[in-house]
Length: 472
Ligand code: MLT
Ligand code: ZN
Image (cartoon, rainbow, N blue to C red; front, side, top):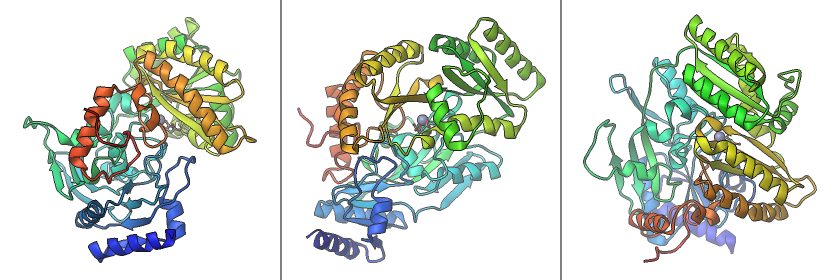
């Protein structure tokens, strides 16, 4: 029965687009039917590999006509189930759309197909004497289309902003099969609604991104990294304020002693300091001259005298800088096998200490039996809270326990005016709680926007928004 459904689906797609690569291979289903989340089994109906915008349009037109659900798929590094196909959907992979289409030295822009890997854009920018500053641990496999769909953030948001701040043009295919050329690389464009921004962060629910034009920036100045140990959150935020007032920070990240334990064990890293500390900070700052380094040392001394910093080290070479970053960048992978139930919360930066302390008490109250690992981009208020599955616990039981916990953690996040997803997206896993950070009016408008772009409801059903037509 399932097999027949799959064969019919493949035949429908082939009829609509004879040159399209269509796979019904179980190995491809397993690799392309899911992202890095481990809470759903991949069960697509087919996986297609268009190699051009025109093939994407053919797929969308056929899907809209026959009511076939499409799941866009990039590097599949997502952490909210946005690229999971578990109900017979057709996965649209951008693996064959990996061309760099153009570079303009005057505009300082590069135009790429959706399947180009983030690290390829970074390398391309470097080769042309420029810099693409969106950076995160999965940049070696994540694709630009996926970055756009989730408005990817990462470790350099503090200085350079999000993916949204880099996109000056987008080509997208809507649910009607239209190809829209949005903003066309313009810096200024006051001609009405900027539809490009609706697609950024839309998690594949409005249409398929086929091309993006990205604004590049000046190469970064030489930099140094401080790895610091601190005693408590209040002290950590004071250190942040001090560093920010005297240095040009490009990153300010934190992690806890538990996160350090896992990353050290997985990567065989030495203890950074003789005495363990409850919290650690990685701060990177522009350091083009002796004077910047002296300023950093003055701030470090001041913070140490105040008792805010317990221990610290400053990088003395590029290789040491990279070694220090491993303490932060390796954390996610070091806990991935548990697997963790990932929370990607954000509050205003000023609210971070109060929020973390309430959240910590809540965790002790509601799940004293679970290990909770915190880290994140604290300089922009983004905290990753990972609840680790106990080895002996069944995955389904763990997920439902974690859902119960989410009710409480998201309610607290709402009390602080925060968001239940800072950068990973709502996807499939956080969908039931969207109403805890967006009002009913906002959700109704989002549904109406979706209906305008995707009248047949074919794009990523069940992700981000509640299904169905908007209530009046
Ligand atoms: C990170 O900041 O390391 C990434 O967002 C991945 C994660 O949260 O695990
Ligand atoms: Zn992150």
